[in-house]
Length: 517
Image (cartoon, rainbow, N blue to C red; front, side, top):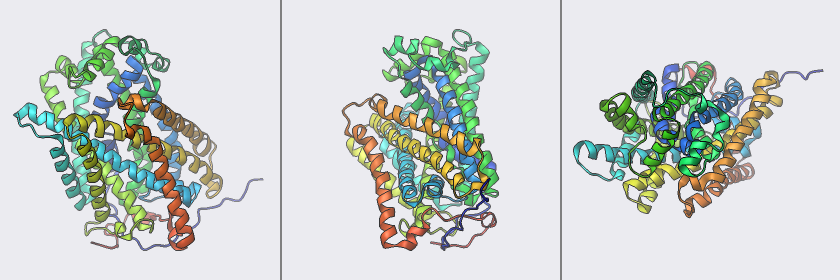
C-alpha cells in the first residue's frame, strides 16, 4: 500500500526585494552558464593539467566527468522542477537536509564562487599583462589589469542582467569559434600521427604510458580534477530562475544543454589537442609549457594547423574569455548573497535591489570581498607569475573542493526530499539511483582532490594548500553554527532559511516590486 502523495509545505512568507522578472530567455541563461565554465580557458588551462595526470588519455577523463555530471543532473533537474529560487544549491540542500546543513552549504557555496571569481581575475591579469606587452611593449603588472577587470564587473552589476548576458554571449561565441577552427585544421590535416581511439579509453587514465614516459608518473586524480573543474558553474540555472521567462523549463534545458554540450565539446577539443601533437608528443608539449619554453601548448597547434592569425586571436580571447568567466562567477556570488540576505541570514541590505532590479548591494559586497582576497595574494607575491600560479592556481583547489562537497550534499538532499516532503514526485531512477551515483562520483572526486592537492598546486610546503580542506570544513561548520544560533535566538529568521520561493507568476513579472537602492 502506497502512502498518500504529499506536497511541499508552503514557504515562510517574507517581504524581499525582487530581481528583474522576465529578463532572460533560454539562450541568455545558457550564455551566463557556459561562460562561467569558460570553454577556452578550460581547454588552455585544464587540458595540460589533465594530460599531466593521464597523458594522452585526457579526453577519456573529460568523458568520465561528462557521464558523472549528467547522472548528477538527473536528480538536480527533478529538484529544479519543484523549487524556484536564486538560492540554488543552498535552497536545495535546505529543503532536503534541513536548515542547519543548508545554511552551512549556503555560506560555503557563496565563498567558493567568490574565490573562483578572484582566481580567474588573477589569471586574466596575467594574460592581459603578457598579451599587452607582446603587442605594444607596454609592461604593466598583472595587478593593474586585475583592478581594471574588477572595476568593470562592478560597473556591469549596476545595469540590467540582460546587458551582462549579451556581453557574455558575444565573448562566448568568439571563444568557441576559435577552438572550432583549430579542430577543423587538425582533423583536415590528420593530426601528427593520424587518428587513434586510445585517447578515449577510460582504462588508460590510470598509469598512462605517455605520462609515465615523459613525467615519470601519472595520476588519475589530477586528470579527473582538471576535468571536473572545467564544468564549474554548470549548475547556475536555478540562480537565475527569478529572472527567466519560464524558470522550470529553462532550468531543465539549460542544465542538460550545458553539461552535455560542454562535455561533447571538451572531449572533442582535448582529442584535437592530443591528435595534433601525437600520443607521446602531447605530454611532451605540456612538459615544455610547464618548463616555460612555450606560453601555451595550444599556441604551436594554431600556428601549425591554422596560422599565426589564429594564435594571435587566441591570445586576445584568453584575456576576454577569462574576464567573462570571472564576471559569471561574480554574478552568481551576488545572487547567493542576495538569497541569504533576503532570508535574514545575512544583513538585510543585501536583499535590496537597484532601480534596474539588479542585486547591487550584494554585488558591491562581492567586489569588496574579492578585492581583499586578491590583495592578500598580491601582497604575498606581486609578480605576474604569482597571479597565475598562486592566485589563479591555488584558489580553484579550494573552490572545487567546496563545490564538489556541496554537490554530494545536494545528491543526498534530493533523495531525502523526494522520500519525505515530495513523495508524489519520487522516481526510482531520477530521484534515487541517479543521486546515489552522483554522490559516489562527487565524493570520490573530493578524495582525489585532497590526496593530490600538493601535486596540483606544485607547492608542497605552502600553508594555504595544507589547510585547504580544513578551511572548507570550517566555513561549512560556521554556517551550521550560525543556523543553530538563529534557531535559539531568532526563530523567525531561522524559519526563513532556504524557504523563499518564487511562484511561476512572480517569475514572469516584468517590473517586480521590491526595495530599491
